[in-house]
Picture 1 (cartoon, one colour):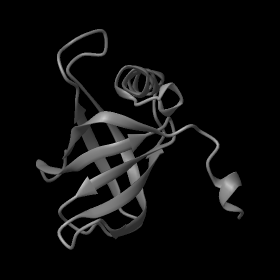
Picture 2 (spheres, helix red, strand yellow):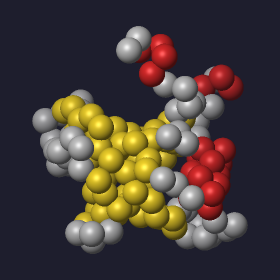
Picture 3 (cartoon, helix red, strand yellow):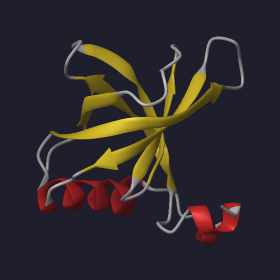
Length: 119
């Protein structure tokens, strides 16, 4: 598959990182670096095995229309060492999101996404 055809949904970097909790282990898994309606890139201090499915919870800053947090399932599809030996970047594909979950993700993109076109 040609790289330019791989990403259909616009991915946005966030103006600050959102913490992500693994609902099964009750441990912080990492921080969202960028997000789209189809997936996220997570920065973590641990290597994450490719192909694993996670139940994740994102806590939003403040409160508002979408509440203080939202949860979703995602599958790890790639992983690589980050800028240092202690950091790993992992790509996740969102799985079977409900309308409400997609609305919360769109809200994050609109409110917290960094728009490179403006700079």
